[in-house]
Length: 620
Ligand SMILES: [Zn+2]
Image 1: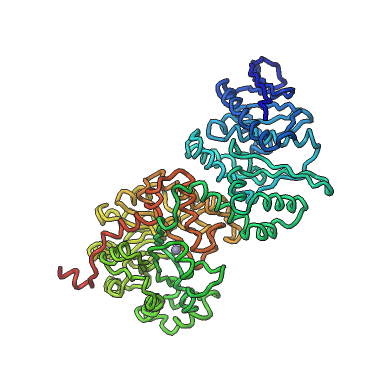
Image 2: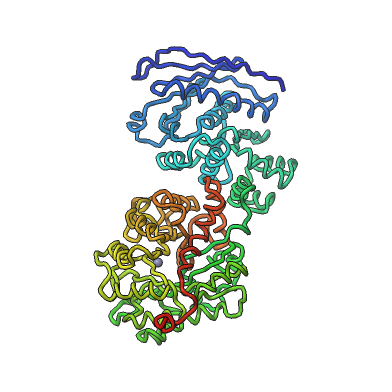
């Protein structure tokens, strides 16, 4: 195709009806079409940067539409002040207004400087402009995974262009919440819109899809099939069915395949092992000993998904609610039924009760040779050298122990990670939401655990307990928070303050980012877990958050799979690989991703003693 476009860039002074005076206009002439850039408070430099990207966008459209590409509209882009954004008190997208034959787009200087893709804004608006002017109507905007795609594209854009820093972009996304229908808000030169018109049905549809996704799909199913797919989509058929018919996968899976494709040079799932610091699968196993062998897609963990997720360490927590040990304590409805009945006969005999739990976990893996119970350092070597999956036993709350002797007994029965408290203060420590720290006995216990070469888990502990543990250990022994979010993201007692996270990091310790939606949501108001919308991106945000205030050496994962309602996109253990892809997409190096996913856990656990019982340890 001939180079049709003659681009003349000039700067005019215009008078607008806006408050600001002395505004300048950049006019970009495209054949007979005029693009005008009014910028009222933004600096000239930025306006020029925007305009420089336009030829690429137009080329993309031209290549795609060929002869059909014909512009008539005039686009006015206003760069308005931050104050105006603030005053308007509405999300950015709502401020985009359309006028016939003259499109007005407001670009916020702050959004721009923080990494919003100005070329993307233009591509988006340009598409709409074409539709409005050439076809007069359009019936909607579509992309396969509306809410999640924008961030993927944004990350891709940054990866390719290195124009903006990841941090800035994330700030921008935070300021301008994800809005339905703004998926292509961030599109740049790597994206374009497909315009599909069904001759019979009339309305024209815009499909704004990343070029990368189109390439991926065409590679997968071939161009003809893809065009057929588009025809069918234009015929208003059920999209979900169409995805399954043509791609044999859901829109979400395509999206992840696409993200994987973006990092295809760096991503090979064999490389990315996953060590998980916390799960509640024991409860499921008590109810059904064969639980992990089953193959139900709604099941959060199974032998199959553990394998697909590429785990090399799983932590099974013995968790029994604290009120279970209290004769007056209320027994909750959900605790009745199979499993709990089995435990009930041991209810006030701690050691027998716990023995049932520990044996349930151990028996589950007895006949599976690829799993190794982690007793000591030598087992960690076996896991790494022979590609085994480690089983780490932990307890979630030492209300199940009366005294240090009971804890020793737990150690001698294989427990290596000791969660000091659950939701109520106990003999050893204060729980989250409370003021108390370690008791005198708790201090002695912490000293003991360190001496045994085992680990302290401060998830569920009070802030004072966290600092007391660090104090008692002299800050020299790595402290683990197996499944805790950050108060900086969600202010709630179960999450850790920045100070606590930093203090844990200083010990060389790690914070396991949970998948429990309640700890990850940015919603300010309490909502039932079912209604909380949290995705893989929120888990990644949480990882970023901890990395930003500490380092990539101090983050790990603590899925909490078992009794939670998992985030969108992390429905079962297989999908944890998406975290590797997501982190690579966000610009993490391959080595950094490995640290987050498993190496940090192994580094910390390497402080473990060799397989010994406590009497062997104390006798030297
Ligand atoms: Zn928990």
